[in-house]
Amino acid sequence: MAVTAGHARASFDLKSATLPLIAVLLKTADLAELAEALQARLGDTPDFFEQDPVLVDLAPVAESDEAIDFPALILLLRSYRVVPLAVRGGSAAQMEAALAAGDVASLLIAPEVATTAELQAIAEALVPIAQRHDVAALVLGDSRVMGRAHADGIHIEAGGAALKEAIEALQPKSIVGAGNIRVRHEAMEAGEAGAD
Image 1: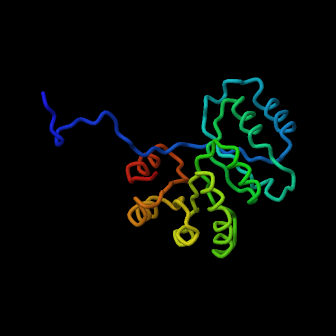
Image 2: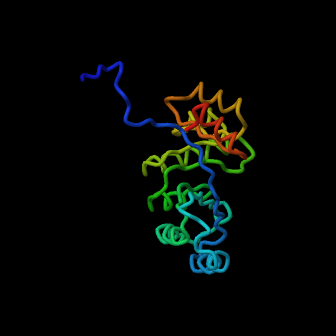
Image 3: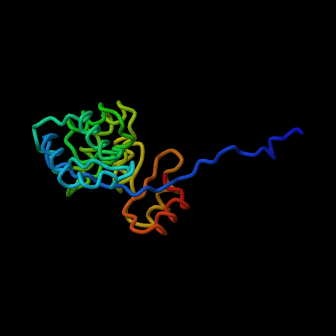
């Protein structure tokens, strides 16, 4: 039986999904110290995580001059059954090292800054680094900064109306991510609205 193009069945669909992420706030660049702390906290519960995605937040160590061994950090985190998916908050050098280590899908440019000019300067420094490593660079909440820095997309945490507005204005050319989602229903609404 012939199947016409109008009646062809799809063998799969691609849909948006919203994942809860655990943030690992890195408070030391000393991986031996981190390993001890992880063992003390999670050693008695080796199955606490089950390949859960995590975001590595470097903000607490952003001012540190000590290098972070990202391949070793990734292995350490994976040994506790978490999967590092994203990194944020580090210095330009730390972000470059993190991205060079691989296993990073996106870079969320979301510094705690006082002015748009500061956000713009940070985005202009980090977007090219991310893109050199084939990592999606997303700017938190400011589409003008996103556009001027040539970022891949925006991350919206302001709620449903702002998310819908961003999706209508920016997709399909730009990624529109959603955050600050507290309950499953909000995640479903974000996915149905078309968040990436």
